[in-house]
Length: 314
Ligand code: NDP
Image 1 (cartoon, rainbow, N blue to C red):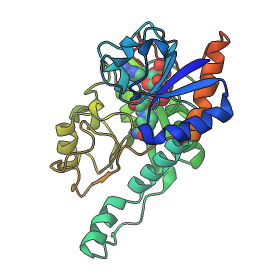
Image 2 (image 1 turned 120 degrees about the vertical axis):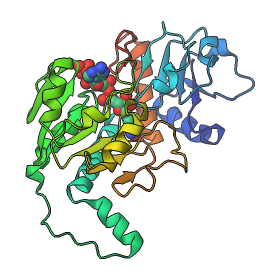
Image 3 (image 1 turned 180 degrees about the vertical axis):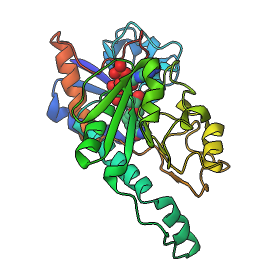
């Protein structure tokens, strides 16, 4: 019997997890992370969200760690996480589709100046604008990060009729998307677009990467969407860019501190839409299906995609 321990949704979620895995992998033993009777040496697979530092290191027979999220920074911030154990990111169709939907909503919100309508509605002001709305085919969108999420997002935007460019570490070819790569490609990439979407992972290289100077490179009117991670952006620079008009609007899903503190100026900024880290969040059944497929592949000695690479940091 293979043993999976779960830290995702708390003990209340355990019956649902058990029912899902009973159907998908009847031979799997499913245990709760907080079960006082759990012996760390029993655990072979761990499906986790924000594990307490040091706990994974005690699980000496771990064959793989499965992140309950697409990002893994909530695991790798534990200095003692067992780095020799494969760390697999959450995958499947659901988070990709959800991210595409969210980004489309965010892009159209910037295109149609929704922050102005939001403030108008709050203040009961009929906030009609003098100028006609922009057209989607005039909007130039840049996607930073062309990974498992950035690639489908960029191609969906291109299919929807936007002009799209993308930037990543390595050069690549994507249908309908003009691609730039590496440090040399960054400035030409930024200057090619008016709306920047951040879909990078949080690594040593990407932390605090989005600065005022970078946002100032964008064409006008400039928009910014952050669905990567909050620490990628220097928040003071973002506010400065919004205040002085360098940025016309921003849609933000991720923040330096989450939940976003009540004192944050971003909550009430007239040019900002805030969402609560909600862009992509796969259902339990989709997660269970994905986790079962990963465990089955690893048990059969097959490799799996979406494996964290410690050398790259993502
Ligand atoms: P991947 O690891 O598949 O892709 C990462 C991309 O970023 C790659 O294209 C990579 O380049 C690029 N990249 C990494 N470092 C650099 C760098 N220093 N310079 C330039 N490009 C770089 O990640 P995903 O697409 O699966 O996910 C991206 C992030 O989205 C996650 O890490 C997570 O933080 C966030 N996320 C947010 C969610 C939300 O609800 N807001 C939900 C899910 C994920 P290359 O292709 O050349 O390797």
